[in-house]
Each structure stands twice: as structure tokens, then as C-alpha cells.
Image 1 (spheres, one colour):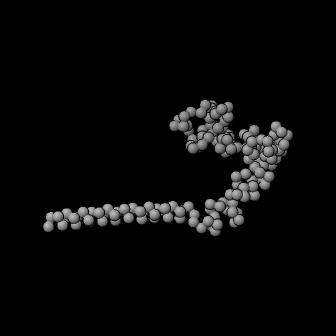
Image 2: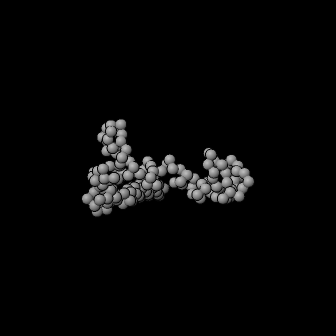
Image 3: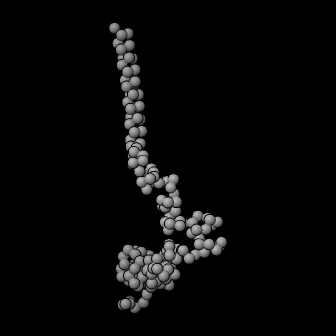
Length: 165
């Protein structure tokens, strides 16, 4: 495994040698030219073996594991995802993120189970069409102003010509 005689503390990026072992926060790491990797050749903070304290028994980040989080109790001795007294639970009773749950957030979703503002069947004029319509109106307004200015210039020229003759 180690063919180096001694292990140096981690130097600056420019001074590192590819496939060389270094000591970083009391961990043995390898520099692959782009990332620091553990002795298992995985990115330093994503290795399940080296960072067991960050992962649950299901090999997921323990703060994001739905199976583990079901058993956690809050201060009110209720599952912390379903507690009404605690602030801002992350997951609803349908095991989805609250903001993405179509059953909890009925007011944001249409009958086609899409966000209301994205559904082309409920609201045929989507935002792109709306903005192009506004641009067309502004363009017409500018064209009308241009025509008015040209007419005024034409009238002034006619007046000047009539005075000169």
C-alpha cells in the first residue's frame, strides 16, 4: 500500500504530487491530481468506511435518511416530521418534501398534477408568450412615436418650404 518512506502534511495544491500520500486532519489521504481521496480511493468526505459517523446503517447520510428519521422524536415526544408544535418539518406524511408534495400543496398544483404556472392546458399563455406580447406592444408604441416624429418633421419642412416660396 505505502511505498513512501515518510508521510508529509498536506502542502499547497501547487506543491502536491499525484498519487502521493499526505496527512490531512489526522487522516491518511491520496492526492489524485484533482481531489483528495481516502485510502479506499473515494472522495474524502463521501467514503462510508472512513466517515462512519456521517452515515446511518442504510449507507445514507444520516440526516437525510427517511427510514432513520421516522424513529426520531422531538422535544414533544412526537415524530419530529409530524410534530405540529415544532417549526418547519421537512417531510410530510406522504414521505415527500413538503414543497414538492402534490397532496399537501393543492393550491400550487392544477388538476393535471403540474405546477399551475407551468401547465399549458390550464393557462395557455405561459410566461414566454406573455413577455413576447409585452415586447410587441412596446415595439408598436415605439413605432407609433417614430411615425409621429416623422410627421412633425414633414409638417415643419412643408411650412419652411411654403415660407421660402
